Length: 410
Image 1 (tube, helix red, strand yellow):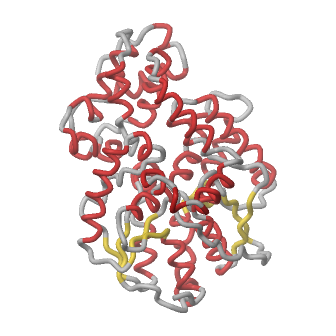
Image 2 (image 1 turned 90 degrees about the horizontal axis):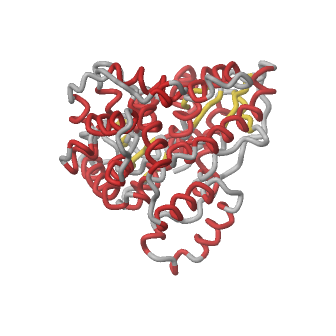
Image 3 (image 1 turned 120 degrees about the vertical axis):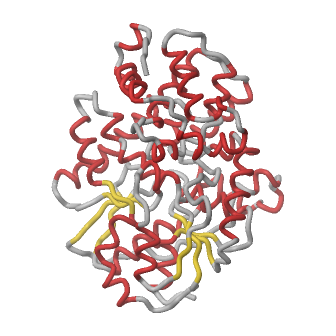
């Protein structure tokens, strides 16, 4: 694909990245078959090939328009197209660049600006947790549309206190400790059960994904650097053997730290090491499969449906790890039809694009229900919360399910 990016943009780091990505795209169209928004809308401009064409036009100097901005907004950044692409086009990186360039040139309506600012600053704020607790206390009085985003208060259970020779870092993140604190606590308890001590580094926080996907790249870089600074003493001393993630969205972001900070002389080498150490919990735990199986006490459910998040199967390219481990432990786990497609959560997407998000959720839940599960399990808080709103079938993180089985909870 021939490109003629504007000289000023081509000379930048983003320009060089965009040019390399565009060079690989042959516009074959395979990606449209697995793009959720193209499946729903049937519009070429709402598929990866059409979005790439629009981004290329802008980067070559054509005017950025509100229409292009809307088409880019509708993208879930699920990166399913990357899994499908025979040429290895890194669409996720390109759409981040395209959004940043278009947003710099096209002013948004005031309502959109306020909503995006509130998400960017609110979800990452220290005030988020007390605000959620207030919302949970007043949940019956909260408008229905907002109530869906405020789950009932969850008890986290006890964090393990034992010391082990083997240690890993965990990341609490920004929204998970307030909305679903038991996910982190359950991960810690499962690690403790197999002789691994989980550590939380003081000062670590949001992985940077929220700001990155809302075109606040400077804020995202600041989040990344803060986390690296918090983790580095333990990493550099060789205290931890891995950084274990129980939120696949955060894991996808941390694994990309090396890319985002590759040109920073102060952080490039450290970011590369951090990304190399990062593992989803489904990647880390299979080494303990035999020990986990020996420790099982109960069977909280026999029939599970597993929804693999896009951030795990497409962004991290980790497929089959969680369901294989659960099957090895003796549980029946089924994948639904269209398991490769996004559920519609996609970080802040369910707030900013509620209609498309709801359509994708309903489609996903229909396929999940067809497997007749006792529970639905997944690997990311956004998917779990989003799916639970639309079904009475219990939805939880698979690590919580495993924690229940290990510790004799019904």
